[in-house]
Length: 132
Image (cartoon, rainbow, N blue to C red; front, side, top):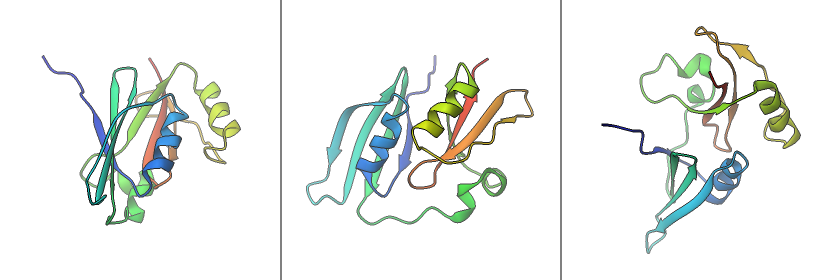
């Protein structure tokens, strides 16, 4: 009866964020902006997942505690966006070769899946996790 329709994030620079997420295969398919440009909204899609990106002219910065899993996971609320991959080592090479981040630490999670985290341009956590 239900399916995931979209995930939404807020960013400081919509163009920079769109370019970041396009590196992972997201494609822009819809956008809107207020006449006074106080807010812009862009929709990106990767397979069946839609990423809705909000960019407010006046925004509140992401707290430092939200930039690492050690300090963010214990706080209530939505935690991160996870992108599944068939091979975690291939994903690590892709991230490093494309200068998305400079250090990747692959870990095995409590549920037995290999993963690593990176940050988007605003510090939002993005998990790269090996598919089942």
